[in-house]
Each structure stands twice: as structure tokens, then as C-alpha cells.
Image (cartoon, rainbow, N blue to C red; front, side):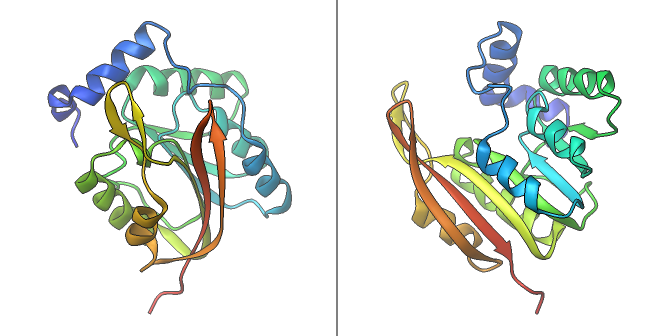
Length: 199
């Protein structure tokens, strides 16, 4: 999706206004303990943060020695991420872009992270996301995905089922583990997916 094509995306406008008004409850500015636990045991390599927002998790990775690319379609979020990284003198490749069009990004990556991005995409865009991601990851790379399970939110059906996640990724990834949890009283899931060897 080019910069101008964002202008025709209602979801893009919604996120723009929410960042401008400071109504971003998803931006906790805290890296989840699941991610911290992985970073404490893994050797640093290349990482990609999909839907990186204001860069909290990308910055946590970079502090641990990872070379990080972060992508988000909200300019205000990326600008904030760049400012935060510069303040800490961290070299992070932050990009304004579409997670369903990753062709301009060069792999391979050793680690991919998505906290709450995939589950907000329409069905066809979820498929493009999955098809674009797996070629960027080296065999054995870990993909950690956090997503809402299906729920009614603001009068609309949101989230993604575990069955849908497996349908999107099982051809290219092996599931290491899935943990069902909750956030605000609603069901969520963490997935640890390992990139299968190339055939």
C-alpha cells in the first residue's frame, strides 16, 4: 500500500485520529513478559516488529543487541518511535508501511513479533500478511504473535480464531506452543511459531 492509498482506508483514518487525540490504550509502553523472557535467552540477530506503534518493543529488542526493523502504517506512531530511539542513541530501521506488503523489506530475520496487528486486518489482508512474512524469516526463526480471540467490540466482530491462525501459517510454520489468556475480561492468545525448513 503506497502512502496515498492509505487515504482511502477508513482504518488508517481511525488510527490517525486516535493517535492525534492521544487515545491509544494499546500503547502500554511496556514490553510483555513473554517477549522479555525470549530476549533474555536468545542470541541477538535480526528482528522485525509488525505493527510496531511507538516502538516500545523494538527499542527493548535493540537494547538487547538486536538489529530491528519496525513497520507501522501510522505516521505519528513511527515519528514517536524514531524520536524515542534517537534519544537512546539506538539505530532502528523504523518504516511507515503496510504489513500486508512487505516486498520492500529485505530478510532474512531471526525473530518476528506481532502484538495486536494481525487480528485487526480483514480476511484477505491477513492472507497477504502471512504470505509476505514467511519468506522474510530464516528457517528456525521464531514468530511470536499476540492476538484477540473473536469478540464483539464496538458493535463489530473483531479478533482471529486459533483455527484461522493455523490455516494462515501451518504451511510455513510449526507451532511450538499456544497459550490462551485474557485481557480486560476477553480471551486472547499467544502463539510461538517456528519457521519450517525450506523445501
